[in-house]
Figure 1 (cartoon, rainbow, N blue to C red):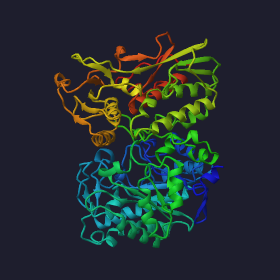
Figure 2 (tube, rainbow, N blue to C red):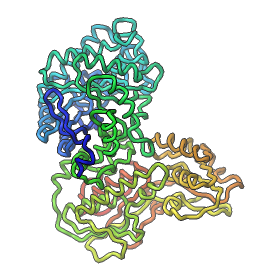
Figure 3 (spheres, rainbow, N blue to C red):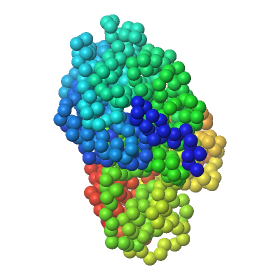
Figure 4 (cartoon, rainbow, N blue to C red):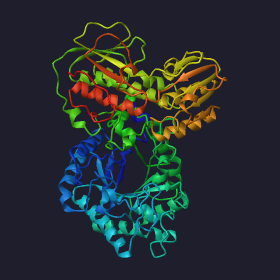
Length: 639
């Protein structure tokens, strides 16, 4: 049945004698799981192996450094010395034993790194700083260029010796090889600058060295940004010429991405933005070159990938963030388990946070901890009741049932998705409903019972609470409700002219929901922007969506002026600016009855992620994963 539904996606592809069992690959994505000394860690190995177990045809590792001066993160795997061979060999063996090809992505950061990471001044084709990194790079001499070309080749040879099936040269996203390709970052006047053939010389020299030093069956992928979205950046026409030259040099696959650091939001699209927008762009390149191409860009549903393959836009599809959420994505496609697919909500928390940059996921809290889930110890069976729904509650229920407990989730509203079910009603955020359905299906698959009726006797009771800050501003005689009232109740009737006060995501989403329903909406924020507690991309996206629906946005409004004006018939209150998590009066419990522990439901993705990870700690009795996070609330007892 699944094979008939996705015939192109499940068709094998053979490259230089290596057969890929389907068209789904894991692209290189930074996890920050490597050891600080550059060796492969157990979490990194477990993370990548889990995707091989899940049925991906190939796994491309996160970028592996070719030279210490090109490290782009503190925990970056390295291949510039033979001492890294044992860990690399173990990684390759762990992936290949499951029938998945392993491709090592090799990289040098160029100007897109920092002396704080490398201990030395960044280098680049030209002394032009990256606008985001803001550090002047030193221009490479020709002898240094040749040295670095040799360094890429030496790293590739080590990966070959370690058992890798091939390498992917990272020449996208503004890193060193990409910097040579683009007039945006390459102002040289020698043989490595100027026209496109000269700008390709650095990359072509790397390819030639690797092809000469490795066996005929060793695969070479190259990743480029087809469009950089910056002045004088690469475009489709130049990318086609680059692709043709690389094919002539023996490159096997071209991975087609977009963007550089300062335009990276074009690649890391959020929920509410289109799925797979760059696949047709990849198709323009594919039809003009002779080698297979990989398409990328918020591909989270097999239907999107299948259509792109059918259209002839791509030959392979990179399942990036969706593979973090669901390591078994290909297996679920093959077996037709659609309820488990499409659970990624593109919140971008996996891309890292400054305080704790390791990869995390609010839907899959075992990313990088796959062995913990695989080796889960059974517990003496108990009857557990969880009062209230939500993704954290459903995660706790699933995990407790896996340990052998009999678990029932009771929610008299029948909306077991909690606050994320509310968010799925916001324009552009319907995909949160897919995530809710996936976590519910996951829980039910291991025996969790969902019930609207009154709860039965239980050995242990956990209750859900929600951080809903009560409005403290004077109402001035107007009708006043909270943003969560609006989001919770789709039948809520309000007058036409509405003032929404708040600087958080819930206030922004409530404004968007009401504007979509035809209300005259003004969103007034006491902060310098809207949706301060969410990913910055949501601010830009929601500004655009609100403007399209005729809403007015005011920011930086002084606290004593937030309710000024007589043209509003109702006022909706979002977050109180001075509300903090450890004030218990800001929390509302689903049930006021006594419980052994609480599980937090949350609206904003970062808060949701913390609540999910703490729910895991509750079930496992482990130290709180986010114990050091400022403002974290206590979890309670564990089983």
